[in-house]
Image (cartoon, rainbow, N blue to C red):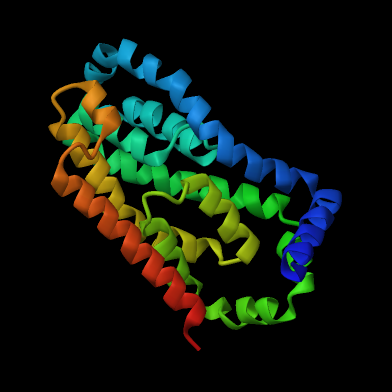
Length: 233
């Protein structure tokens, strides 16, 4: 009971000192679902237009890279859904662009989180000196946490960007370890989209037993890694 009261007090303090951060966490929890409902019909309607784009042109790269980075960075669309749709509509030629766009989105999201931070984590952990000491003690090993958080298909991309900003992991670690962690789930979603026989199959993704086994495997590995990070001395 005391622990819950301490967390509640911490959240109240953050709400008073930095309401923008509270709003940001609510935003990344709600908006991806709403954005998907609004944007998926747009992609379905304009599939032919996207398929006719010339990917040897720098203008096309820019046309894809910047909007997709903004969609992911500001939580307008989940990364796995965007990866599946990209795979179905554009095929393997767009894989590099997808990877570059989520790397750029990482920089956008992390930078925005740092701008809004205002020591929110210190406020939240003020009631828990041991937890605060643990976080401080793990500062040099944040790359491991970033990798396992990014590996999980169920931890939202934009949410984790805010989390990394609060933990002050450093943008270089977020880009490097985040890239490695995101790659398996991105390839799974993108490949499912490429192999899908319809755009609706691409949206649903993971429709066969093998894909589900991989998804569950990534989730379990991610949970194991996160738990190991906080338990290890």
